[in-house]
Length: 331
Image 1: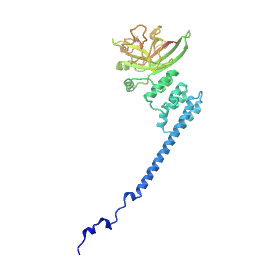
Image 2: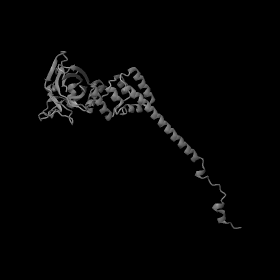
Image 3: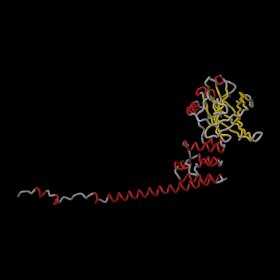
């Protein structure tokens, strides 16, 4: 009997059990349920985190905007808030301008909440540029050099700082002492004392040492450097975001061998209208030549002793102890 091939291989009559279609398998339903469950879980997680963040921000806002908020209560609340968020989220919250258009750090400085600021700073490793600029402004408004130093807001030369660490030199120190109104009511005086380790060695290598400090509601920049003729100079001016000022200036170096004795004493009783320069000032263009034009910076000769060995101007460890006294003519 002949075999009918067409009949044997008729797809419509095949008795072979075909695999179930993908639509018929229970896998697709399981996957869909899992995806839906995952989406709901993500949504609930997002809502929970957002709620936590809102609650934390509300408590932080109460602390920095409430006058005379008890420091002990503030510190316990801050620690509880930090426990409610991840370290990264809490740090970001403190540096975001989410309280009346400013950061929590800004308000802590402006309202002079030193303990609160220190508690905040413990959760922040580095401020982004936008936050640093706002905090520099806050320090000028509060005339707060201590917070300026604590938060490391000074504009420093990265190469010079790397050299200092390489030489094993301790960090330089600046102390600011604000004084009362002098004489009549339109004079205000303050001093800034600086200790610069390995002064000669570092200045010879970098040919410039820059510093900033806060006093009189402004950020002041002073530096030691070399002019176009090879002379060593001292330069004083304002840094952003300071408003213009009208200062007179005195400078002296402390004699380590005879305490109280002033060396290299420079004094200028004239008041100079000074403003923040629109570019970084240099040692060769410190004065405007136009009569009546405000100065971007003022400069005085330091002398050639920087190149001498063992001068009387540095102590036995090579550190320079210098003081600047600035008197402002108030508006």
